[in-house]
Length: 322
Image 1 (cartoon, rainbow, N blue to C red):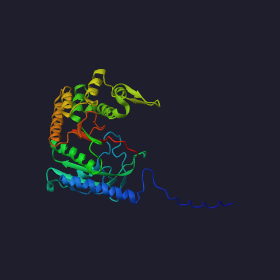
Image 2 (cartoon, helix red, strand yellow):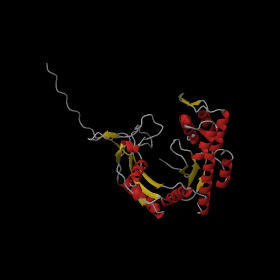
Image 3 (cartoon, rainbow, N blue to C red):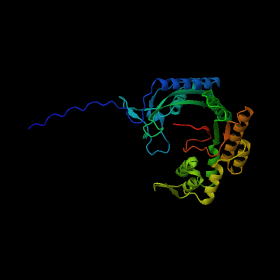
Image 4 (cartoon, helix red, strand yellow):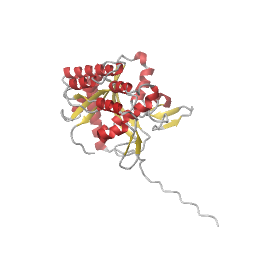
């Protein structure tokens, strides 16, 4: 007896994980925010540029420098000419390609901004989407601390343009060269120690969540979490752990006082270079009357190797609800 043909499955309307539909209210709010940010950036003299949502995969480089597979976390496909193309995972890598391709015709330094959606092939979770909007501003072609001070002041002005009052946010600044100098002094400088340095950076980046005790464990032999999972540590000796913590724990005092404290542990050429850059940024923001909004914070290190100088982030001081 012949089998009955299977009924075709009814098509079900469903959205892939990690994506969201957006209605009129969300679109209007985004449009207003983008316009407010754009006005601030253009007031500082930054000019707009747009790059496509897709780039050649080799031009994008690695999504995350600490991933084993070069294109892990990226949506990619092969074109009809057998070239691999990827959806952009951020707005910085396409900017690098744009500047390299148009270098001779661009002003120096090149100060630009861009907004657009980026795409991450990651496991979705709370606040973690596969498509989301970024708004970038970049200065290319200047190693001056003045460029970083300008970025911090522009970030402060952007917060206030978006309706976040002064005193309800802080722009936190540090310089990775300071920590790089400390890591060099405790014996984990050089290319062969890159993995160990990355473990240190990841540990420090968890300070807010784990506190000093948890970070100390990750800088040493390792840490077992509440579920029983063990994370291998950086393997530093006690003296090295103490020196790293001394240069990265949150500090109180004025910007000038914090820089002076950091100076005590900067006993290398690269560390002193970082101190000098922090000093210049501190002086510039103070002279521009931004000293109450832009604070030197040694705990800001970012957990990736590709940060090489000043790093900054904005923290909201008001209570927020997701």
